[in-house]
Length: 324
Image (cartoon, rainbow, N blue to C red; front, side):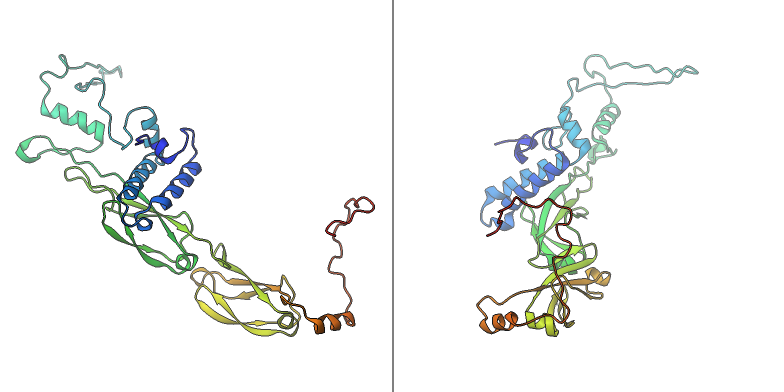
């Protein structure tokens, strides 16, 4: 079983942040406990993937791991000389410093000395643990998760329940208008701390599934609406879906493909609008009456819809019949 975080995520040591994120999201989706009920091995893989990404996505942790200062779980590696204390005193007026190490590998080291060394190694220390000896409070590690939600839920906001690798469940509130890739920080929902140290945080990255006909542009929503020839030529009042439900939209007469209509205030959070691009669709079957009418029909205002196309371009070779 691989323990190297690069091997767990299946990336090279030169992988960029984007490559790390892509690899993590792919593996997290494949092994998420919610998608693999009754498969403890998937939950274990998911946990190892999250730990690996938590380490490598942190620039400082990644650099320390590459230098061999911490292991794959972010724990400090034992130093080559585990018992030492450096003393530095500024020489009066000279700015020089004096360094010395305790003899005999730490012989005669006081509890205060040991506490100071561990405090430097782990970043946090406290005095007065049970029995009067030194004790240490370490903050727990952060854990990362990916939560996939649909487009409508992302636009309107939703609460989703996720299952953590240790079996706990957690309700996550997704705010309205959240963007793809946004990371929610849930304080104190990560790995437990050491001693009286606080727990780490849960970092939940939101992945938004694409919608079949809505596209987000800033705070606006854009969609393409198919209309019939009659609706485009004569005009109509049609029901149109929005992120807040269906509304009526008036189609002006003589509206062709590409006509853009606006539904004011129907965008994200009421800040943007919804834009509806019309697309004229022909009937699927044959329409003899329509074909006969068009053969004898002449527009009142003749026009060429391809006017200007290809100006300045080289003509094809004589005899070319592309698309025939």
